[in-house]
Image (tube, rainbow, N blue to C red; front, side, top):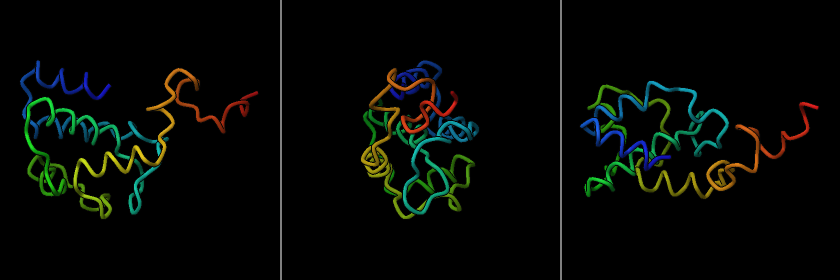
Length: 120
């Protein structure tokens, strides 16, 4: 999905800063995913989509996403933990075992495996 997001950003001619802004106005994207240490919630969708855009454009990623987001008009300093390198954030989030990135289709519409059967 992140690759598609990056492709669409390219097709619409969005700058990285505009793309960041759009990614920050959808607060419920990652509500059920595990958060990185020191953060109130997960930002894997935002981070992965932005990383894919940088890769697609052959640009290096920011070592510290906080000032990059600030330049785009999004203050993420109060919700960003100690991991601020974009590629490292994505790697750590994936290492947390995000169930939706590896098991799409096996679990019904955003339900974790531990939640299966709770509705019955």
